[in-house]
Image (cartoon, rainbow, N blue to C red; front, side):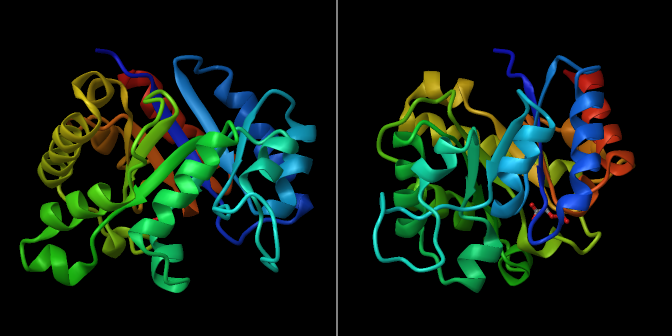
Length: 250
Ligand code: PGA
């Protein structure tokens, strides 16, 4: 089974309209690497302008609400993302799980709402440092998947991002062996929960301090189908080499 490499930038709460030229440069360079699927998830305010600046590009949100509409001040519904041309959304990022108290059930509801609205989903999981140190990382992550994976879904539309919390924005990364062991365990869990065909089709991205220097090694680890990139996705100079690493391996 060959799964296309998928390299996604999560801009987090970074980026004014002046950053749109970086997005244009990223999507222009991505065209040189047609074997890799490239997407950017900027703040909500930049989604529409980014799609206008780079027509046809895969642009998405970093979160959505699970309800279709209503009295949820400050929130954005999945259908609102589809409406402005977004193609994907990240759900369950650790900065949402931790900072906004999102449970596995919340993440599952968001993923289901996003899929129902026609978006592709990147569902994030990952353990805190103390869990990694205690040897419980795989059990922890598989429990997150058990609790947050939708009951039914199109396996081409849902990707998992494994992001160890202690590796996000820290410059620390797990060993390639640990990444491969985790991704292999995730794939076995997906096959168990969603069926073996789905388990083979679904892409599992690694995230946490991916950069131009370590991308080839991390993307080359067993069962790694791409990367979810934070800091190094903000400029073309840092992000395009990660896309190129994916193309080399893809
Ligand atoms: P980082 O963030 O690449 O800056 O570590 C990754 C993420 O949080 O998705």
